[in-house]
Amino acid sequence: MLANALDQTIHTVFSALNVPSNAYQNGAHAVRSPIDGSTLANVNYLPAAEVGQHIAASQTAFEAWRKVPAPRRGELVRILGEVLREHKADLAQVVTLEAGKITQEALGEVQEMIDICDFAVGLSRQLYGLTIASERPGHHMRETWHPVGPVGIISAFNFPVAVWSWNAALALVCGNSIVWKPSEKTPLTAIACQALFEKAVARFGSDAPANLSTLIIGDRDTGEALVNDARVPLVSATGSTRMGREVGTKVAARFGRSILELGGNNAMILAPSADVELATRAILFSAVGTAGQRCTTLRRLIVHKDLKAQVLERLKKSYQSVSIGNPTENHLVGPLVDAASFNMMQDALTQARSEGGTVFGGERQLADTYPDAYYVAPALVEMPAQSDVVKHETFAPILYVMEYEHFEDALRLNNEVPQGLSSCIFTTDMREAEIFQSATGSDCGIANVNIGPSGAEIGGAFGGEKETGGGRESGSDAWRAYMRRQTNTINYSDALPLAQGIKFDL
Image (cartoon, rainbow, N blue to C red; front, side, top):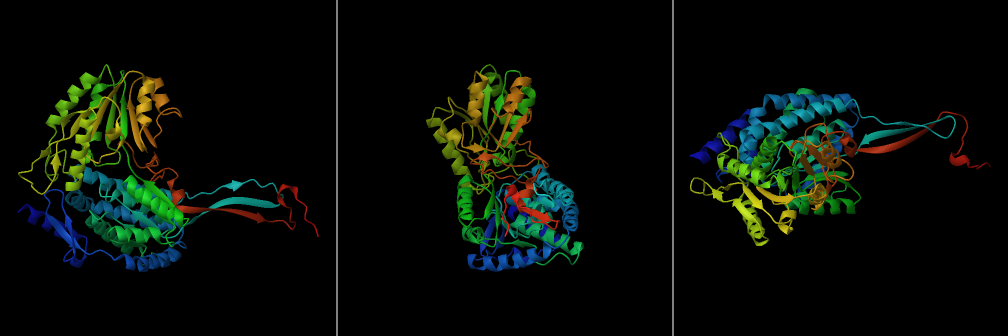
């Protein structure tokens, strides 16, 4: 009965978005819902051999789109934001059914799409270069920025629509076309986004060329064909460190550019002066939201030894009371995406025990009700030290708890992992807060004070250091990554003075 209901919901939403039934029915590849393991739809994959045709079409679109003035390009993105507002609930439903997010988080993800559209519209009138002082008289030197070409976007299942929008909105206002390869686990959200984009284009007008946004649904081979094509000068990839390492090296081998947003493994330092009530609420949301399947999930709690017992007691009570279940209902924690995620979580907990850890929670839940889905109790793991399992990011609701005595030790633990995405400290000590955000503090791309590591928002550049990949999406001057820089020198005199006073007279 439930499977029929989920299937029917997808059909209803897609009908509202004018998605033809052959786009999601009767395909060779089943799309599974994490909610109950049922099949939502069946899609066809694009063969790797056909990717090149779509890139060629995207190149043609780019050549037309780059001629459109940037503020006019911004108008398309403004309309896209309008369309997303109109269909916010529809798209959020698809996110919930396909990715397993609770309704509030799915709505929040679509809101991120709306926010980045608003942000990008402003950027469309602020693609500024510099005027540079020239050492030669009668000369003018400046810096200009130009679109790069078709931008490849590879997105992950855990933020199936927001990550696409972060890249797409900026790439479009910068004058690029886009080619999107979504996760194999979430093709339906991508189909819905493409339908909404096409609706925005129809409302925008004829100066938007065909194939401005191209969706390629496929497997690893399809993504590899996108990554290897020299006509795609920039590839933005979000996902695992393993995936990013492959994408980054392959793009670099052909002298392309990449924006990589990879693993997290984020920490919180909980200092003696902290507001413990505030910190506990932040820990709960950051560690168990989206069933721990966010790159900004809190995975390591570095707590002062004098607070550890008190904080653990609070967390255990909170963990026991958190509601786990169908994300379409009134629950705070939904399912893991699939069996592989569940098995990786259990393997990590087994390893943690072997490395001296004490595990609280982590068991499978609701197996009788949903035998083909994977709901778990969030896990708290007390660790004697930051061992190998702690340094490895497991995409599941596991929070490793370690104590510290001296602030320098807490900073060392924060930084002593391969990943460098997000971090936070809870303290009312101004010195600790400022040191944490200084050059000698957190080595992450995001460092927050008295808010969890999930506190990234539109406007600040999103991304991290080390094995997180070093890329930046969505905010600040991230638009520059989607453009190429050019230096121009203009001689408005009738002489030809050479730089550095060189004489070369015939």
